[in-house]
Image (cartoon, rainbow, N blue to C red; front, side):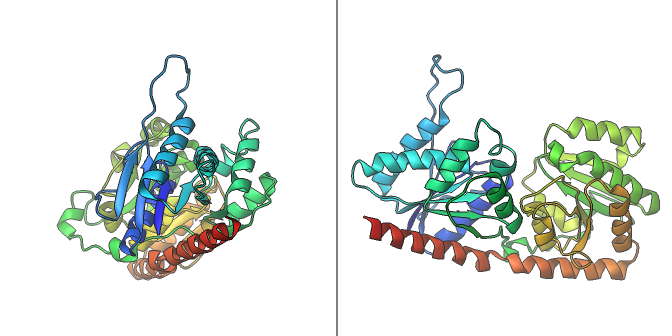
Length: 379
């Protein structure tokens, strides 16, 4: 198949999943075209089966906000015609599914039929999409897609609750390349991050309010009172300053390392003993899955799709949102005894293996084939 993928090219989960999906599809013999405004951060190599097409948005003083949806729709039309793209897989309902539908209608004027598969990732539904200004456009985009998937049962329930959806929604979970996550890092490299007797606690996110970064600090504060530990915070975002201030107020500033955005998350996780994800909500919890694949047990909230990923008492523990005392208690249960820690590390890997990329990508291939078959019947 010749597949066009539209996604955000940033560090966010949806862009990472879309990029990894495209790379794996190319390895399976499909031709993949990424169409977005910048080369995705995880798309390191282009080749015979992987292509990137930049969406340029002309700057017109007439527009207060430059019309990216219009530029994207036009680019999609051009790329479908130029490269013979069979199907468009768009990640996020708006603006991507909305723009893809407009491209589809323009192409139909020339008797070119291209079906759209839309994957819902979370923020497009629970945050942006549910806003009254955007709700009609999101509903329209989902219902006009030829196939719709979402990354968790929790997100499917939210979508059906918040919108008047006529389309079927299939759950296809996020995934991880287990083989890619297995690394051999040396103790001397770990020593650059923490002392031998210190446990390394890690959090990775875009440091937005929904991630409850101050809860990360509070949980770590309680952990380090009981055992030597150091906290690695990976990412940039609006809550960074609040986290820095709280760490200083609690007197643990020197034990908290802010690493910013990093392309070495796999290396950081490779040294970690525990991962914290106390989010208000997560549609899936990809950061937790990446940690588990690296053999890092997870202490998380029990909201959204996280319980579908982090198995309580096996790969880690779940607590109510905001219950930092319970999270710290569970963290210490894992960390205080090396045998317990080793057991949870192994179990975290086992749990992550259920989401291996080689089990999930064939589900997308089946959806593409079914959607294309339906499209042929409608021609």
